[in-house]
Length: 202
Image 1 (spheres, rainbow, N blue to C red):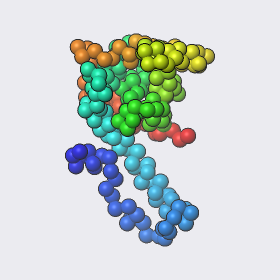
Image 2: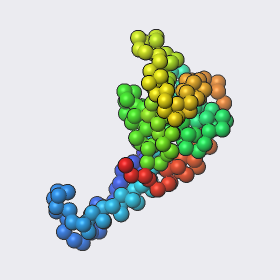
Image 3: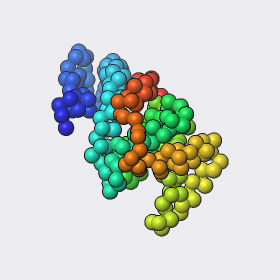
Image 4: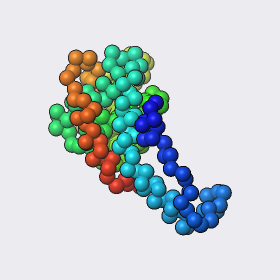
């Protein structure tokens, strides 16, 4: 990992050196003034989220998991298909980032990715990413002894049709080594627009 990457991922500022008041040694002792100081730094740090997401996406070029394309290629293909199919900005970026949870573990990766996206994207885009494995299972779960119809438990959800389109048209088809996908640079302005929004709490 380069120093530039470390600078993006790690806050190298000198902590509370610029705070003149009492700090305390535990959160229970932090004053209101110190918490305000910390919150200001956290708000500043939010401005680096897009950079961090782009670092994660680039790292996925080294993640193959036995597939003929890297996970970055898969992400780019999925987002390209979504864009060419007329998806909105939130869904394009969600399609690009839907598997970033795999940078930590394949297990539960949809929920990990969804929670990373949640403060910045629409409720529909968040939901599709969170449950995309249930929909994707239609295409391979039977071969590994799992129920291929897990998606049906979500049939009454307002974003069900979008979940089907994501899984069936964009995601499960995005393992084609010959597909002419857009580059990460093409999607970078979209990533910066979405993660440049004011993050929602809760």
